[in-house]
Image (tube, rainbow, N blue to C red; front, side, top):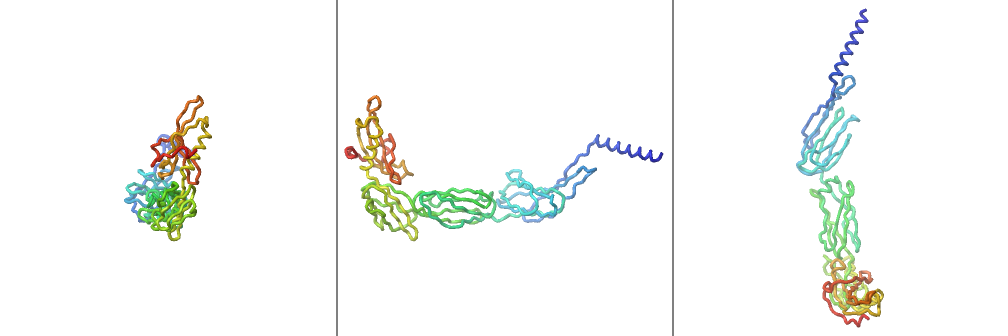
Length: 387
């Protein structure tokens, strides 16, 4: 009888407990401990095991460390623990940074100033947390100079810190943009590249500056450029920019000769000729493109006879020689303009203009219907000389 009463009591107690749980369900909650973090200080603490009731987690403790950056810097987060399940993560309420979930070890990242951050430690166990400001990125290249012709060149560089710091604190520029311009990008952690675009023969420096750290002075020699000149001209070749008193020479004296000290040229006939300006161990090549106005005028006339509707009715009104700055980066390029008339399919005479010039490899190009006002130093040529 006593056993029966005891069993009934146990059953009643269980029913009462179940009733309480159904009426007022157990709600698990987290206990959060907040700390103000000081950079450079180690924090050794223990996250307690979660409290449970009947296998249900009733309470879980999280440690949260808050801090504000007073200056932009790389930071190094060191976290040591013996618990495989213990982790930390870094977040910001006003800056787009999130490290995700991290275990033990050292983690580096860039944090700008005047932003608030928090590090959350979760999982039971003893740990040590420390956040240090790290040195700014140090930038370096394998070489300190390069020579380039008329094509772009890309140079790789490395840096020691985080890509965030490099993106915000690295500046790259050319000392003389008339010689070459430069652009750059951070390609990966600890890696980047800058691309040099040549503009004219000469010497310039690419300056790479990392704020709060080092500066690199990278020397660039642009060793090739082009110069457009008309037959009969007697003028100085464009000296390499940033180079004083080079020694000049001509590779084809039948086309043009040059004074080795002054660089003054006498263009004798149409064609291409390489002028070399030597300074020390560096040779700068200026490719001269000499235009014979009569020769290119004849080329333009032959071109017209091939393209007009009725070559027999082709009429030349005017022929002009001169220069244009609309062809190659503002350079004065010798051109010939032919002012002509030709009949259309109905037999009516229509007036047009065609412009001809040589490019840097001495091939002829044509353009239609330019304004006469686009030609600098315009002079009239006797039309009979190009027929």
